[in-house]
Image (tube, rainbow over all chains, first blue to last red; front, side):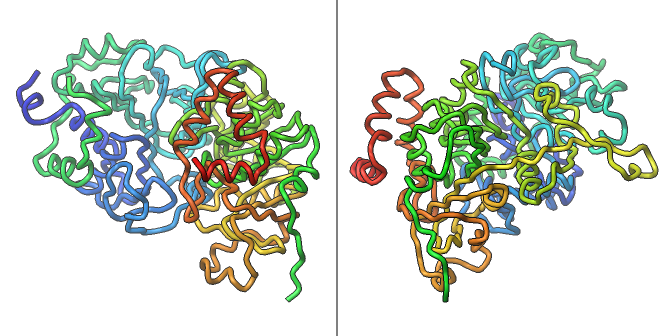
Length: 259
Length: 289
C-alpha cells in the first residue's frame, strides 16, 4: 500500500474522485448520482472541473449549492423546480447522467436490483425495477458498487432491470442510440466498456489494490489490458473540497471503510 | 359562490368501493399517502383489489391485511427503510401477483387512462426483462419513419391503467373537492385522479375556496373538483407518512410498523392496537405516544 494512501488519502476519497471522473465532459446536464459516495463524487465534479453540471437537492429541486449528503432541502439554493413528473420528462429528454447501484451486474453491464431468484416468486425481493429500464435506454448511466465481489459482479444477472450492451445491441442502432453505460466504479477500482464488443474491462485499480485482487473479486472474465494504471488521487484542492465542503461529516468513510 | 358540498367520511368513501376493483393510491413511497382511507379499507370486508401505486406502507398494509390480488408499482419502499417488509413478504410467499414496471411507465399508463387512449409509447422497458416477465406488455411500431430515414421505431406500448377509483391526500381542500398541495411535489396525484372513474381525497383541513391563496400560490392548486368525487377532512390522515409542512414522517412509528413483519404475533398486536380501532381513536392513540 502506498504511503500517500494510508497516510493522507482514504480509499473512500479515491472512490469519490473516481465517481467525479465519470461526469467529466458532461457539461450542462443533470448529473444524478444516487447514494452517498456517488453524491459526494458528483458534487466534487461540479465544484471543480465540471462546473456546468446540474444537480438535485435529493428531492424536488435542482440546487445550485453543494449540499452535503442528507442535507435539509430547505438549505438548497433552488435553480429550478423538478418534481417527479418533471424528472421523468428530463430523463426521457435525455439530458441526464445517472449513477445507480446494483445488486448484480454482468460483463455487458446488465444490472439487477429488482430481486434475487425467479422474479415470479423471488427468493429475495429487492427494489423492483425502479427507473432502471427507462434510465439505461434513454441516457448515460454509470454504476457504483461499494462491495466489489463475485456475487455482485456475476456471469449472469437474475433479472435485467438496467440494460447492458448486448441487450442494447440486439435492439438495433435506432432503439439503442441513446444507450451508454459509461463506468462502473467500485471500492476496488474502475471499470469501463471501451472494448470492441463492449465487455467490461478494468480501467484502473485503486491504490493498495492489485489487478489480481479485482480479477478474483469478479465473477466473470474481466478484460484486463496489459497496463492497468492506478486510479488517480485527489488533488489538494479536491481533497479540501471533499473534506470541508461536500462531505464535512465524513459519511464517505462509513460507506467504504479504509482498508 | 356556489360550490358543491362533497364532504364525506372515510366510511362513506370506502362504501363506494367494491371487491375486485382497481384502485390507484396517490403519494410516493412513505410520503403524503391517504392512510386514513387505507386504514378504513383494512377494516372493511373488501378484498381482491388490484392496486396501482408508487408504493409505500399503503401497499404493505393492504397486502398484509389480505386485501390484494395484484400490485402495479415502480417500487414499494418506506424511504428511510428502503424495502417495504410486508410487500416483500407477499412477493416472496407468492401471495400476490405483481406488475413491477419502470417508474416512468407507471406515469404513462396513468396519462393514457386519463386521456382515454389505449396506450402511450415509450422507449423505457426495451431491452430489459420487463416484457419477458410481464407478457401483458406489448410493443408498437411507429407509423412514422425512424431518424434519418431509418426503419420505423418499435416502442413499448404502455397500456392505460384505468382505475375504478383513486384515493389521494392533499394538505388543503375546499368542500367542493378542489385540492391544494403544500409540499414540494404533487407526485402523480393529478393523473391518479384523472385516470379514475371516482376519486376520493382526504385532506388535513377543509378551508373556504377564497382562502387557498393565503395558504399557497396559484401553482399549488392542482386538484380541481372536476377530478374528485368526495372530500374527507381528517387532520393527521397521512400519518405515519410525511405530510409537510403539516408534519414530518413519524419515523418511530414507521419502525414499529416495519417490525410487525417479523411475526404474526407482532402483526396481530399492531393490528389490534392501531387498525381495529376507529380513525379518531387511532389519531388520539398516536398523539398520546
